[in-house]
Length: 450
Picture 1 (cartoon, rainbow, N blue to C red):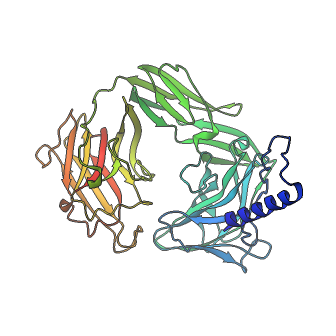
Picture 2: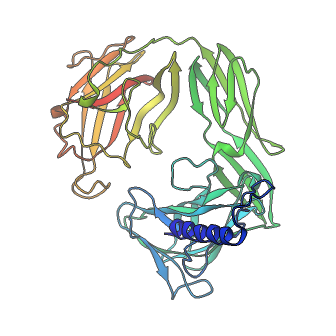
Picture 3: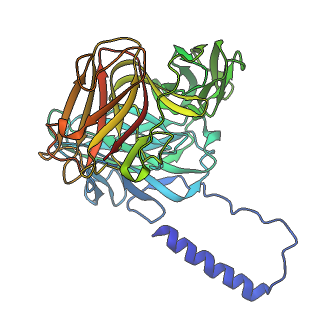
């Protein structure tokens, strides 16, 4: 609604200018309209400048306003956290704001009982393309109003930000509760100081052609007498590689371009980050999986260079225990899972209706192990996690199964969907989970077909 109103106003202004100036050309260059530096996200009531968008799979009607419990003023935000599932979403603006003049997001919070809010922060515009998300995890909230400060890792990055505030809160102790927020705004606080950025030290044993995103970046700030840890996206850091003939880094993505060893380090502005990523790269061993030949009309593809793929939310879900590397070998995309206990593939925002399909296909290459498991999860008729209509089913593959698992070569697992006997339906498939006793799995050509 805000966007349409703004377009109408812009159109009216343009007509007015034409009426007064005729068709003469402005001799000067066209300058962009300056972005707003408004610090207010929410104060007393929604104004139309900011819109709340609930996260997928959250309680959609959890958020409202309250005119009786406010910290100050005439109203506040009220969140009814359900007994199952969670409440969460992002406060976004259609017109980006220039937030470079502030160093913190500030809000006040209280709850109907003492709880911890799972996450709260800024920079998430609910599009899946955010670059500068920053957050505090496990934020303690009591039954009385208290100020919460989320320092901005590097304000200079926020020249045009649409994601102003986001949160997610799950039930605790088996039951929900009421959560209130008030006076959500950006501020320049003198007590926010002493940034201590950190890059999680790790060693990547990988292959030429691999790409992987830098994750687990954070910065600890002094906020008065307190130390506040802010987890954030890698976009706040500038990266340096010790050997660009082995690994390059751009936009928080490491690309392995040659065999050898390189060290990747980072800075937050002028402050060096603690930790480094060691990249050990070698030639790619498995080669390519067979190219699928089924007609596209018979396929619902999640991952294959042979077809158009449906959107997938996450190839390694937040709750899984696996490390993901994206490989591109001579133009062929491959998913590499290492340190695999179980890997969660989520397509919740675009559930798959596989009622007309007969098989699930995936090509896998494992260097060791004896078992490999595939689980499908359907979210039921409402397409939402939780409730009695969800169902799941898991199949195990080994050397004696049909299809059989083999070590050291590409195996096409052609799995009849009828074999997932625990699925009550398959019209809202939303998750696929990979597990087994192999700790390394290469994955290609994941699709449903008939």
